[in-house]
Amino acid sequence: MKILITNDDGIKADGIKKLAKTFAESGNLVSVVAPERERSAAGHAITVHKPLRVSQVDSEGISYYAVSGTPADCVKLALEKLIEKPDIVISGINRGANLGTDVLYSGTVSAAIEAALNGLPAIAVSIVSCQYPTYEAASALTLKLAKIYLEKGLPKGTLLNVNVPNQPANEIKGIKISKLGERKYINNFEKRTDPRGRVYYWMAGEVDDSNPEQGTDVWAVVNQFVSVTPIHFDLTNHYFLSELSKWEL
Amino acid sequence: MKILITNDDGIKADGIKKLAKTFAESGNLVSVVAPERERSAAGHAITVHKPLRVSQVDSEGISYYAVSGTPADCVKLALEKLIEKPDIVISGINRGANLGTDVLYSGTVSAAIEAALNGLPAIAVSIVSCQYPTYEAASALTLKLAKIYLEKGLPKGTLLNVNVPNQPANEIKGIKISKLGERKYINNFEKRTDPRGRVYYWMAGEVDDSNPEQGTDVWAVVNQFVSVTPIHFDLTNHYFLSELSKWEL
Image 1 (cartoon, helix red, strand yellow):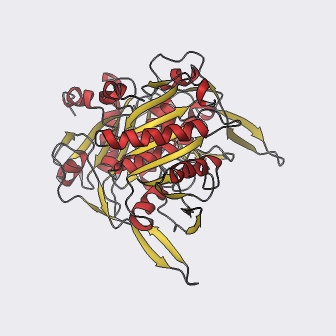
Image 2 (cartoon, chains in turn blue, brown):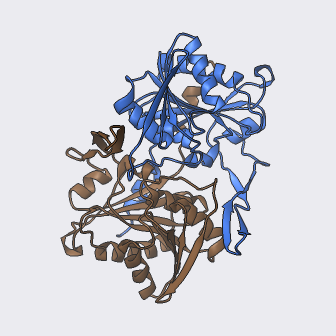
Image 3 (tube, each protein chain N blue to C red):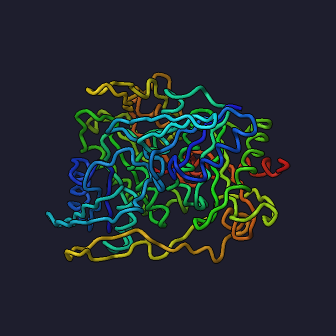
C-alpha cells in the first residue's frame, strides 16, 4: 500500500513516528506530511493568507515532510504537490482522545476528513490518554484496519474515527462500532490577571464523561473498548429539509 | 430578542456592523463578540495553548467585544464569561460565500455551529460575492429569518446556513431551501520562489461552479436565489453503522 500519514501533534510526535514505522516495516510505501509544530485544536482551519513552507527529510525509507501549516493544509498540499496519490490516508496517532462532539475541534480528524473530501479512504486514530501514551496496540490495530478497509471499502465520503484505550493490547476488552457521543465540559475558561494587572482568559475545562450514553464512542472507551466510528462530512440535516420548505420565507 | 453577533472577517468588518445595526434598530439587545482581526478559513479551530484577550467598546447602544481568538473562541467565551445568554446567535454577514463542502473551512459557519453545540438557535449568513458586497438585503432577510426561527424552532443541534446573492433585494429571485453541494477547486496551490531562491506554496485555487447539482446551495446562488440550508454537526454516518458492525475486527 501507498500510505500518507499526517497528524496534528506535529511531525516530531512519537505517535506519528510509531505509526510510520509500523506501516513501513510491514512493506508499505510511507510518506509523512505533517505540521512542523503542534496544531492541536486546529479544527479544519486552512492557511490562505500566508505562504506554506515545506522541509523534507528521508529516514529509514520513510519520507518526512514538515509543513508550516495546519493538518488540513498538509493533506491538501501533499496530494496536490508533494507525493504520489496514496491508497489511504492515516491521521494520528493522536496523543489524547478525539471523541464525540470534540471531533469538530480536532486537527487529527479534520486531516482525515480532508482526505475523504479528496475521495480517498481515511482513518483518524487517537490514544485516549494524554499521559504516558503507548502506541503499540493502536499502531498494530490501525495497520490491520487499513488492510480490511481497503479490502471491503467504505461508502463515498465516509471515513473511520478510531479511539484506543491507553493499555496493552491484551487488556483492551475488544472493539465497539460506535456513534459519536456528546462531550460536555465544565469551567471552560479560567479568568486570570497578568503581572501588569490586565485580565486574560485561558481555555481549560474539565470533561465530564461520568454518564456516557451506551452505544457512543465515549461509552466504549470509558469501558476499555476500542471505539470505531464511521463518520462523514455532510452537514446537511436532510431530515429537516422538507419541514423547512413549508416555512413561509 | 437578545442577540449575539459574531463573524470571521473580524470586528471591524462592514458586514458585522450592518447586521448589528439592523438588529439594534429594530429594538433588540445586541452584543457583538468577534475576532479582533480577520480569521477567515479558521474552521472550528479553538485556542488552547495561549490566553485570550478581550477589549470592549460600546457604540450606539451596542456592546462590541474584540477577542484575540477564533470565531469559535468568541462564541465560547461570550457565552461563558462575557454576556447574558442570548436568544439566538448570528454569525456574519460574511464577505464571500460559505457553500457546500466549503462550510467545513468556514469560521463563520463554525461559530454558528459552536452556538448550536451550546443548545442555542443559530444562523450563519454570507454574501456570495467578495467584491463590492452590499449587506442591505442580507441583513433585512436575517432579521426576518431570526424572528421566524424563534417562533417555529428547529430540531436540537440544527442551525441555518444562509447565502445571499450580492444584489438589491428586488433583483433576488426568491429563497430556495437547499442541501449542501460540492465545491471543487482547481489549482489549489501556487508554487513560487522567494527573493532568496527558496520555494514556498500559496493556497489559491479557482472554484468550478460551472455545473452545480440542482437542489444544492451552489445551484441556488448561481441562479440568483438566496440559499437556506438546515445544517447539523453530527458527523456519525448512521447509515453505515450496522454494515460496519458486520466487519470482523
